[in-house]
Length: 413
Length: 98
Ligand SMILES: Cc1cc2nc3c(=O)[nH]c(=O)nc-3n(C[C@H](O)[C@H](O)[C@H](O)COP(=O)(O)OP(=O)(O)OC[C@H]3O[C@@H](n4cnc5c(N)ncnc54)[C@H](O)[C@@H]3O)c2cc1C
Image 1: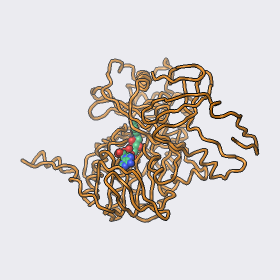
Image 2: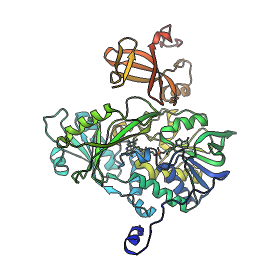
Image 3: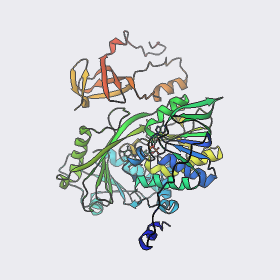
Image 4: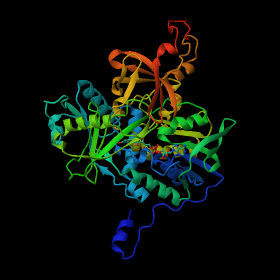
């Protein structure tokens, strides 16, 4: 149980120490080097030592921990996907998330809100019925509901038929949640460091040493680091690392922008998503409306924001919540999303022995942080890719065996 | 709004254009292996730097080539496809792509 806060409140002079220990000296070699200190890399490090007793591990990040997409997402967690492979995988992640504050002894502010995906067209209603049935079949709480019920769950929504895209139905997913994304990274980092994992920030991987088809070392701005295994978990930079390893990926790096409004009194319990209107929104504990839309229209290695994005997002927000017309946007940012053609991730082995990949997370990978860390660690720990990861192998693109998640992942992250 | 220079229509809002990805020579589909075809269909270089891409001006359905820096979002040059391709690509069975 996270008693630290209680202690500091009740005991005179008790102080909460820093979350992370000072960085240790960089060693010449590690059993496992993890490239990328986002949630995925840090979670993998934690489970490597926690589940498999492998503690001679380093996590390298060219910037600061959690400074990539982990600290930029809109933090939506859900498992109401479309394919059975996807639903099973994300369901395991949601379950891990539900116990994560306790497991990490770190409050990740997990907040179960209920998740509403609006349908404005007959085609969307059909996809949602399909999703609901797949979800229920796999034991995931998911229901197609209609405007009377939507109005009861979310009376703030504009259910008028006198708009461009009237709301016809919605997919309701009770377990849908949000969490504090930074805390997820810090919690994993702190627990991994406590068990001996080295966290090295400002350490950029610039090349890979491969001999006999096997990874031998990573080359960094701080020198060569030998390794038994390496895992790349670098989101938007996935293709660049793969190029260092000598293979190509079915990935395009595309910016995804988001913004928050000024803080308002709490009025929105649910997470509301509309695929047709390209908008998703939830209200944070601070009262800000956290808003996002679709990805930028073309590939870019940049996290700049654009006015076009905000104009279209706000127009759609106002169709759903017209009373927000006077509310101001407070902050904006973007991340670099690693988009795959089937909207499913790429996980597991690569053409280089002992070089593992955790990529293709696009706009939807925050929710997968725990399951991905746990199962990638299992792959490295046992040398065998676990069954839940198997459908997401890079090799699926050689055999044209894609995992089509577009209907569940293209806008509602 | 950001502008793009269309070789046919001159400077237009970037929202009038669609990017169709890297300019790559298609493999000879009649002779290539499944793996080569899969690589052509799915894999990208996805470089951080200057890339050459197919773009289309949607209202006029005009296809052309653009050179763009994917780090700075700067469009360096746009030109007609005829600058790169002098002959029509023959995609008929057993035809050789150029
Ligand atoms: C605006 C936005 C909204 C999103 N909303 C959601 C959402 O609601 N729900 C959801 O599930 N997902 C969402 N996502 C997606 C999610 O954020 C990502 O898929 C996820 O955070 C990826 O985590 P990661 O640890 O793999 O990558 P990151 O957190 O990006 O970490 C990768 C790290 O690798 C480092 N790195 C890169 N290159 C190198 C190198 N050469 N050497 C060393 N280090 C390197 C980077 O500095 C970075 O810290 C959203 C993304 C964005 C941008």
